[in-house]
Image (cartoon, rainbow, N blue to C red; front, side, top):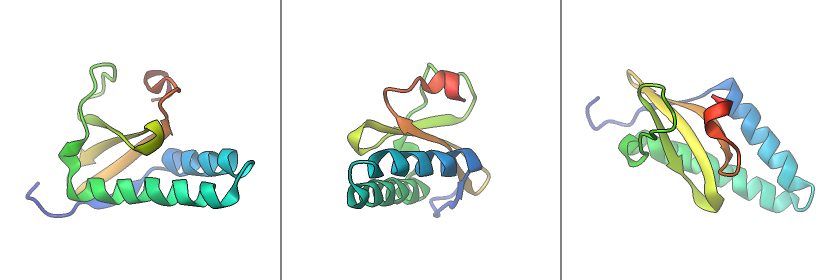
Length: 101
């Protein structure tokens, strides 16, 4: 990897996570739901430029998997594969990430 922007790949699981996050928030406020999902997608794009800002978490025992804590304590779990940054999971920090992977 050579300081170039990585390709963003959002796994089907992470896409479903975004839908569930939006649905949950939209029950109270649709505008906020859209804003939160947009911001989470922005964080994912940012990770393609700065993939090492996430940390390797000792609780996740999968080699190469990194964790980025986003605003409102959302957790973006990802892995770098060749020239791709693959988003594996997006969840609220209250969920047990280890059991979700």
